Image (cartoon, rainbow, N blue to C red):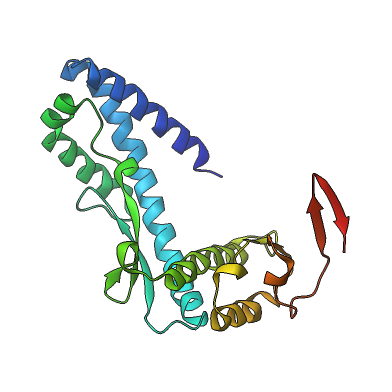
Length: 220
């Protein structure tokens, strides 16, 4: 929640800076926006790296628990070299990179530096999940990320267990992955599961069941 304002400010700066770049404005006009881009971007990047570092062991554990053989991991894929969890180091790295691409930015009319250009990379074994994961592995990765987020929130939130929401996942899983997921969610305090077909929900999962039809909700 603390970073919501930082994200909003950063997006505003990028939007305004892009508008100025499209007009091929002077370096003096860009200077104050560069300063804000670097300051906010450095903080966002540091927090993102810290979050992915915290999530990574949970992702690895949950992926393995879904009956997968190859290990899974996540990392921060940054468009700027030298960024870390340290804000001051990020300021230096972003400043240097912004100087390097100054001409390219004016030519293209778009901001080429900052966390809006970054991504999270998911690896299965030694290959990126994007482009190489099978259908089953892709679903396992998605579930591992969801469950990892749940585990991290549970470990760090003073409010207790979060609510785990699984949207129509069982239809996409084979028997082995489905059974492992059942074991994983059985002890979660609150779980909401949706399914287009009732038969897709394993019978081993018990709880309140609601049927939605034509805008009406009925208990089963």
